[in-house]
Image (tube, rainbow, N blue to C red; front, side, top):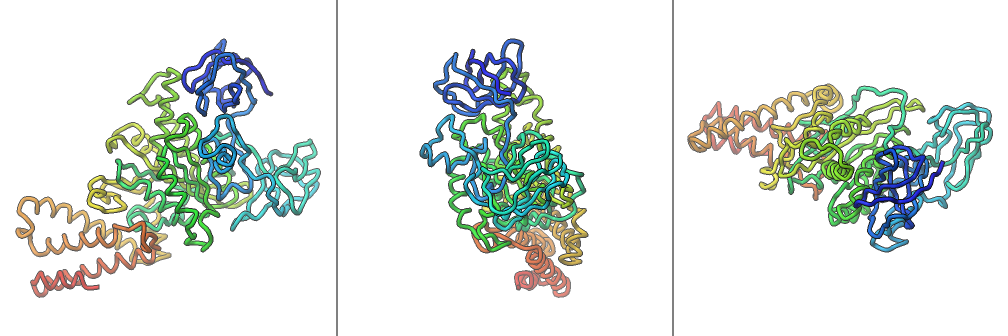
Length: 542
């Protein structure tokens, strides 16, 4: 039910309204320009609205209208391949309407309502359906896009064949209209039958991740790092090459030039898994640093709701966000404008619970249609000054299953991806050892252990070398330093702009096994002959 009122106070993006009947988190339109906002506090005589657009020119006394719904996401065929802002407004439509600068108060429908779709019904007239159960499907690119029932009931009519999103698909006996699209509250997780323990690896194509710190489908990972450590490039590499069906990329507070570079590159990329255009299975949510900061808080929820929607079709979805720190900064700004009690470093006291609740939306689930779908999350964190003890990084660490530490020293030495092999970890590694041993090679666990051992031993030898110098080391230790350098240079280091940007598990195994086997031969040669130069030559021989 819509309610109306007036603006009685303005403080930046925070607006006080006299509008009886509003509920917490109701969506409202504010002012004559109909700016989008959301109720964030209810008081005795007024409601506090957080406006997600620029409030420049807004005046006291202008009208306010409550829409009676929370902030929702429109879900339906045609989402993939598009670019949206944090409120799911299609940026191409905004550019066509107002040019390169977004006009406040313009809220076009995010889906193309005139595009024809061929509907294949899975139910018939007289069938009983449950809320969230598939009614039928349409073909969207390489996928079979399922259309779900909005409510439970008996089907009174259901049309087949070509339709557009403007047309209803049918009706339930209680009069509920069946459409090709639906609305879902952004902050409410979509339902599923049950959550299952993840068991399949998510192959990223990055050797250091897949080999030392593997991720599962339905798992969560973070990679914090200071400025210049390669967070954005690593996220973009995962978007291009990760073995998933759908990629949802969120540029949350990213610099506009970086988003422009991503868009310019990704539209021309070929999908390494399907040989089709990569954008056919990609959706981008862009809330760059020059866009309204208040909408940044909504962008992650918009993206994860779309991700859950495709997960419910039995697809494997990867959600990438760059970065969670800028989302948390937006949360801090909103909390400060509401004069809430601040927590550590000014962040709201509910930061941990908000982040934990967001991470909980990942997982491998059994859907209403009986399929298995997964939602995996890989989130970048930008700790100020590279300080990993700051609140956002620590809150993410408590909830994430994998931690990829991006090291500034490695980045400055031009080692990318700059994942520190001594500080990073994956809680999924032990569970996936058996899988890789069975599907790739029985040597996989042995080589992982051997690689870790060589890198760890080399770290201790380096500390001795700083005291006595390389010439003061034993020949075996000098050989160890050489093989560790080769592991870092030829295996852990990976160029994101050449043909080696993606490595299959088989290619990863072949490369590390060649290095380890060469080291074993060189060690034997050194033991037999006692000649270091001959052993080093054996190590470098392919």
